[in-house]
Amino acid sequence: MNSCILMAEIYDTPQLRHTPDGLEVTEMIVHVPGVRPDDPSHPLKVVGWGNLAKEIHQTYKEGDRVIIEGRLGMNTFDRPEGFKEKRAELTVQKIHGIGKEMNSSPPATTMAQPAQRPPESYESTRPAPIPVTTNVAVTPQVTIPEPTYQPANFQPPSYQPVSAPEPDPDDIPF
Image 1 (cartoon, rainbow, N blue to C red):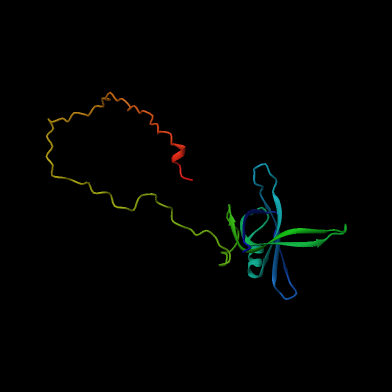
Image 2: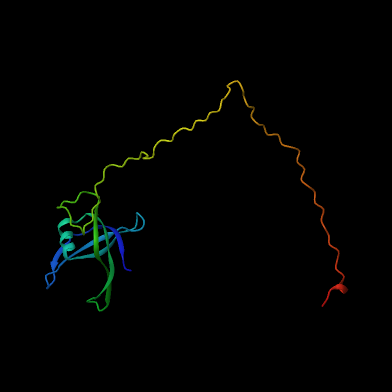
């Protein structure tokens, strides 16, 4: 299964074009942050197709932070210097905007946005426990003494080594 989920920042505005068959294609470069804060970001080409391509072009712009889900592929190009170069490319299946508000009309079902939920309440929904009462009469004048610990004079048992008699070599059957 080839599935990747990346958090990235859009580096350039998504470019919309059409194939000879009339299918929409959007291409953009995103930068994926490094593992550590001082590591540089890494550029990655991202491609969206069809209705998703139109929505990416209309909804997202340079500088937006997104979470992208898609398939990772490798493309090979012939360089003018005479060698081949490989580049990674992510084909978008879903894209989610994060951070600031997106300036667009409501996205279609392929563009998943976080649902607006009412503020969560952290109070328990369980009923309060019912106190248990017993019919035991307690006399307030009676006090029960606290048990006290007094170590006993403990003597560890002494063990005597047990020695087995040596076997007689003549009694060993061969």
